[in-house]
Image (cartoon, rainbow, N blue to C red):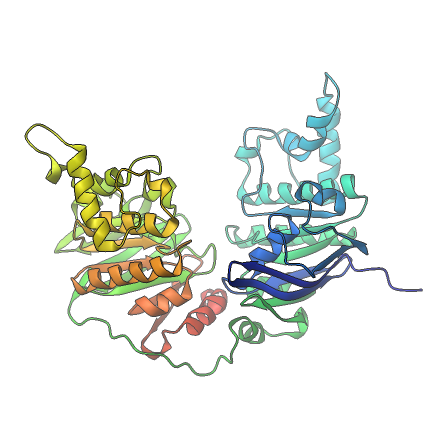
Length: 512
């Protein structure tokens, strides 16, 4: 007898975005009943591969995808992925908080059923039977918005597996895209138990994660991507932690070389002591005048929350900031008080939080200095736009037309305009979250240069980012966070892109 076909078999998968090759001839085989890890650092191609499978991207000609031995048409018809045997659970779980557990579990079937009446008692009983089969304690009548994050994740996974059975006739392949970063350890254990229950019933799971230790714990085999290429597939239990990290970052863990960037001399310009907030803390750090300090870590490590907590954009539970001779309680600070103290904050969500996409560029840029632009008879649009045009020219905003809505600019030019907005107030402390995310190469260089000039002018700059190249290029030091705490500091010759990647992937071990 011949062995049954694998649950999923991919060969020759490539994907190009303009001149950039995001995937280069990648192959991946997932066996029936297997938990298969998919790892790689940022930009390795993991997300692109998943989006090709989901039908979001069309691959280059020459690729082949087979599910249970059956050829899948390419590009993958996104509306038919469940019927073919694929289901996806992303960090945003796709649940409706205001509906009950049963309604979320059975949403597809209930919405398409041609009946005027739903027998809710029978539906709740059916949901309870499903949860019992997987060993879960979920109340079918509970409102999903009141469930814990762990319970919501478990519900989303069970729904995906049940949908596969109902629509494809196969146990199916379930793709879990970073399901654990925001779960406590007990929740991770529950999720892993559910994954094992799913594979015991024949399903296959692709477990996408940055966390090497979790991949080693839950997977049978794992595939590593780097720079869009397949590095290899390994038997998980036979591969040590450092061996995984070496394959991910592309070199031995021994030795680092890099150009040292000395921390500016002098007393600290800003210091944070005992900062604590949801999922963060205690965190303490200092910045010299003119220093650019980087914060990074894996998804869910808390690095990205620190700037928001310092600014008061998220509520802090404890902590104190010393800045310019003042001592400020971080559990009472709010954005107006932070701005008055000389602190500015640029969130990662460019049009949703950092700026107002529907308003003109001029109004976005002029907002912090409207009092300066006010004349005896009020504010004049021409003055606001002339001021914004001057700043836009300095930062290289193109097109430099302040009357345009911010949303009309490219990502890089919108970001330059928003950075210009804050540089004009000559802040003591700049807090930036992913300042070059979704920015083209030319704009990226302009932003780096602007931040360098600000630091040389005396500003202390704190950057939260997972762009290791950016951190290595810009920063005097980089702090790595795991589980809400600083676990490593990189400086001098150790401050390289590869060293940052290594420290991030080793961070969960360091935090244990």
